Image 1 (cartoon, one colour):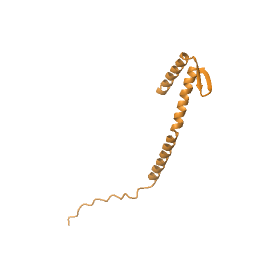
Image 2 (cartoon, rainbow, N blue to C red):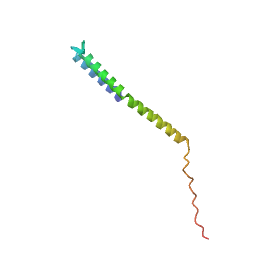
Image 3 (tube, rainbow, N blue to C red):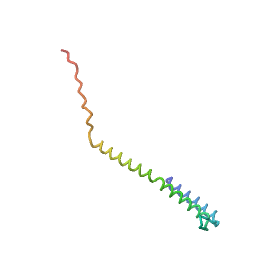
Image 4 (spheres, rainbow, N blue to C red):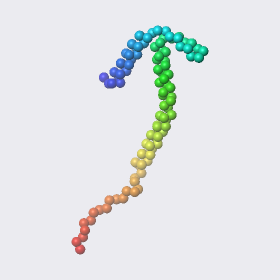
Length: 99
């Protein structure tokens, strides 16, 4: 079996085990609001929010690198299409005459 599939199964098993062991109800206070919910849901929601914040924070860098790669690929295509003008033909070697 491929490694990503096995890693996904292990992660799924650990998540289910974690969920079953942490089913207590917790109270969360955010400014004036108070929420009650399962501990595992609170932790998984926090994890998902952290991942979303990371993805959003890294988007400008990803977009900039994507544009740079596209520009470099365009430049490579241009250079591959045009023959080099500075390269001269090799001169043929003539043996010295014995005159």
